[in-house]
Amino acid sequence: VNGKANFKDVEEKLKQLNKPAVKIIQSEDGDIIDCVEIYKQPAFDHPALRNHVIQMKPSFDLKEVKINSKNESSKLTVFQTWQKSGSCPEGTVPIRRIRREDLLRAQSVQQFGRKPQEVVLKSNTTIEQKDGRFPSINSNALALPAIVNRSAAILATVGANYTGAKADINVWNPNVESEDFTTAQVWLKAGPNDNFESIESGWTKDSYKTTGCFDMTCSGFVQTSSQYLLGGSIEPVSTEFGQQYDVTVGIY
Image (cartoon, rainbow, N blue to C red; front, side, top):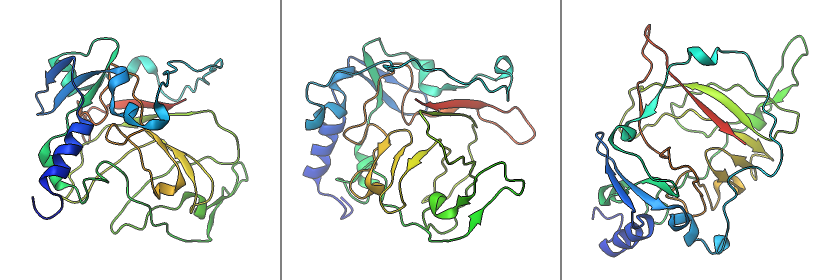
């Protein structure tokens, strides 16, 4: 088992992650999708969620600010590949089945699916808008992990209280090496670099020291939608000098 995990650990982790399915969908991209009853998803193995009732809507009146930066009617539709092969019934959530080979590629069975603790670049420089319309941004607040050959583009706003964020993200499929990855995300972050909390696609606290949830492989992440698969491939994708496709991502 390539020295990283023994057979028993792998089988126990697979049993923990893959819950009994009400319906099974074989996606043409090779994924197997299990439609799992919403209260039988992996999150509810966590002691803190015992007898938890999912709140499907905010308890406050969410007033979304309309920004006319893009004509909504002109946006091109994207979808997830698995949706061409079926759909999950109401009351279930789609979960990508974890396979044995997925675990064997991981550095640790116990840490499978979790983000590593971030090593932050230290800097005291600031980025400031010359005309004074935006507040100064100390780069410590926006520091990125110290990863070799990492490139990033950031649009940041600071200095106010936020109840959410929303962005139209262009969908691409760039070439990467075997150990590389690409990501595009909306991030709400609070606190210093050594002890921040953030909301991304999931909730993360303590700077990834002990947690690092971002999908169904991490106990504590609760999914509510029966329509969208975390980790599912998206198509079509944008091409240089060709059609451009966006996906809207929001945190409320």
